Image (cartoon, rainbow over all chains, first blue to last red):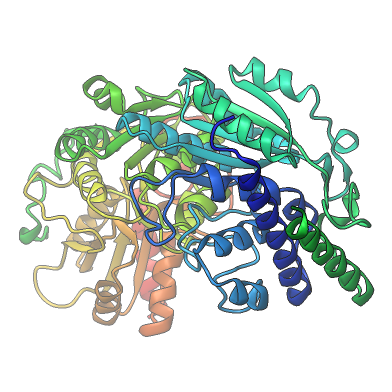
Length: 286
Length: 331
């Protein structure tokens, strides 16, 4: 695969480890916030902002930029952490002010406070529609920008998501890529117990989308999927990213209870210890 | 007498005064706005003809998006289009948009402060035979409560055209409240229009008014008829056309409250939360005077002719005159 030397992958792995550690520090300081989703999407956000996106943190309003719509706004700790590492904000400010009064880093993204985010979000199910509108508008103007919509799996229980999927299929929006965090959890339990989403692939295929399934923690697969998405003509692409909820913290992994939960001091300590160890391991790995 | 400065329709008092649906003016205004600005795009939820977007779609097919029966998608796609520099107008019936998709409007349009224009056609009970499911009488309340949202309720087709053209030029999220049925033409092409400005359409020939009537939408015509009849009985009233409900013209309202000392509000909407409530908020805070509210009293609509329904739900000309009598006793 071009552009993807081992060095680049190591850089991405290091970056993702830092992003995970910083977002957990921020949530611990905030004494509330979501953790399982942010941890499991750290690799994909890293691949987006440090490899795939056409963007310029110095000019967040640039007409040339690709658009990123975070639909499930509650995983914003990973968006903030990644964007700060990319240069859109101050990492220390993020770690100390997340969810606090007057902070750019509101409990759910709010453009008024952090204008570098493309849209405010929180209520689920409306991100794919906005991304579809952006992709439609860019096509009308024959512009080359790509649009990425980041979605949770459970928000596919909302009708609005499928209204958007239908429209994007109708208009063959090949400048639109949706990335679904298939971590199988939601607040009250496992998605397949709450409201089954499978067969997920078949649903999107039925709406005339091209579907790619990947391991959402393997940078070669993530970036390979981005490359494929660009090569697909006359269809929107959805990347079903299979992820491990709470990735990187042993007691959180696969646990729906960690969708959002305050840490005990012991849990905070273990989380930080494990994520620091993971960061060191990646750094020292030749 | 009619305020000569406003250059209103001289045939306004005639029984056969020309009539046109308010939504028609929206359709005409949209085409003019789109000719003037290539950023104007149109979205519709399978109601192309009845929301009067057809002329736009025929002229600018490449700038039109048919969303299908999906009003949540209608406004969120519009938000996305606005995010990449478009000025989207989206149409449906008011009961479905903003009726069905309020949270999407809040989060993706007003919270983001995106210049999406929402045209809600078929507002009010005068929708008629379709019945209560299709008669939006809550839309002013749910739109005016949203920060950043501008709310306009034109009094006739000509004002609707001007309001649509004006809305296309602002960066503000905007709700245009439109009606289905034909209603009397009150204004003319020469009547001045400015967003956010209420206009005195009728005032006593001499002296101060005993009461002020503040009306919005098609009922402005009935308010004028009531005012003329009252004048003939020796009761001088002023009629204010409040087409922009938000941002509200506090100056005009306070001035009328102080001058008249009693107010009646007239709207085809629930009394709770509507234009009258907005007026009461201004009056209570600045120049308290008694107010009577003409509108729907906490009920749903039903099938019938527009006239039958307006009478049944208490929004006829006599109801307006009765409200003036009541408010005068409270002075």
